[in-house]
Image 1 (tube, one colour):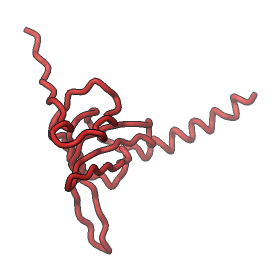
Image 2: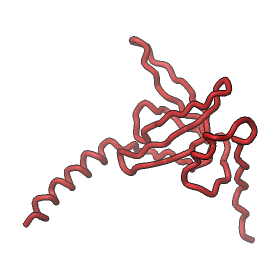
Image 3: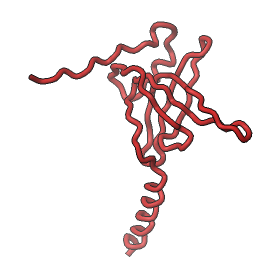
Length: 128
């Protein structure tokens, strides 16, 4: 009997979550260098600001999915967490595809200079 009461709640949650998921999916992977174009409101004006960095983590699912982008500014590491379905993200462009063997790249936090660079992933070869 307890199961029948929980089922409508789950359906309602899915309905609410599906309404706020973005129509076009952001296509990128861990290790990719991306340009995240975010909308910034300053008073009554709106402008687009670009944040370029390496995607070091993805977590969550559905409306709660987010990703972390890391970049180096003046020798200091800056990380920013972006919700995947945020309306403030106007566009996401993949600049480079990095070759990685892990799901989370937190080890990049300890590295400096050229050691933070990732090897670029080669395109898949076509079968003859």
